[in-house]
Length: 86
Image 1 (spheres, rainbow, N blue to C red):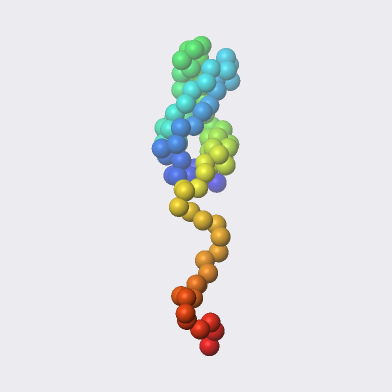
Image 2 (cartoon, helix red, strand yellow):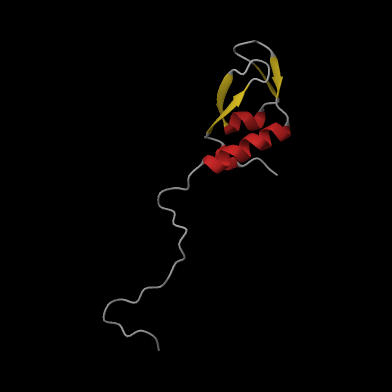
């Protein structure tokens, strides 16, 4: 599963597995890094592809579709005064 480009500008939260310190970075940062140093415990944390895929999947479910998007089917409306059907 590729990491979605739609999350490039979305803040994604991750935690240090050693101390639980929370770090928030944009998806574009997360797609490109392999490790980071925790700001709290200063330990080096490796981020594998499976970790990234799990975080992206979690955050993709949290994103709402744009307000102008409608999931209802599009139907053709007949203008008032026009006979319906052939």
